[in-house]
Length: 382
Image (tube, rainbow, N blue to C red; front, side, top):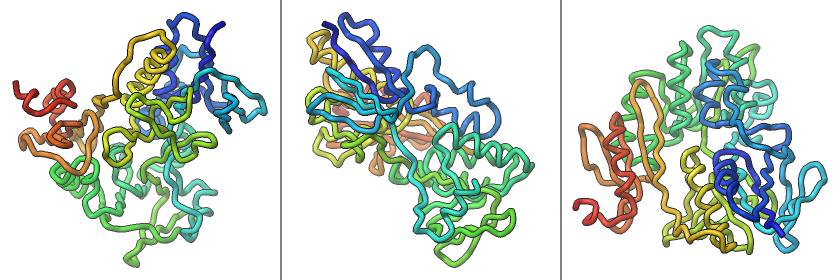
């Protein structure tokens, strides 16, 4: 009898897992995506579709047979997945790779719901979001855009829109955006680029939204306001998973959930593995690496493959912001050791062991750390 593996999610983690399982003997895989949605590359949402460089179909990830029927509930004891259509899927092993959802401006903020309803306030996380932004900006040669948040995706979006001739204001709750992700050195240099290129309002929070004709008025917590054609929310993501994992799927070092037969990978996975605080990594390359690793763990548990060992993030990623390139590998954070100022490179450690590296305009130097991560510094210097 074949082993039935169900993969929930057809993004980077889900498709990578499906690819890793495809050649396994005695394993049948069902890849389940969201209702009415084909697999697509989420990195192209802001970089391509939202600014009109790509059509939505050009962001597609081809080569997979996907059942487009959103998973709503998992019954771990019965090993069943309930789908939006009312159908159920039995499984012997389940890999949850449903990704993440964008943090939104809550309806408790005055005027937010009305601004969302008319498309003047939006996230930029999905293809639908990208099409909404594209269409809103298509009729305006130089739109006034407020980007709320200054994390990597939000900052890159602000840069892309500025390059397309739009007037961008970047609003961030932090006085030094990016410090918690890359450390003070990289964040300081990046903040200088922001201030030289777009209008910045750092240390500010939106407190209200109002529609006035074709304008959106964004009120800030210092009593000032911004007039805009569009506001884009870029406040990061949270795990997105069916019940009972609505807060994400907690995983061990090998990406197993604390429930028999369940694994998780990508933005939905909440890692508890080394005594540190729970952590997530939500970018395409790392999600794909997690998906492959979770599949290999699953095969090991079935007796079909060697133990892949613990998952140790080392995937690279970059973002082009105001003519500079932010590069990172592995797991970065607020703490870091400045190892070079020209080019700017920071190594992020825990107990003397490098877990990640980041830098600005230093792609080769940062990426050179990929094979040195998760080893004591004394070994990396040999």
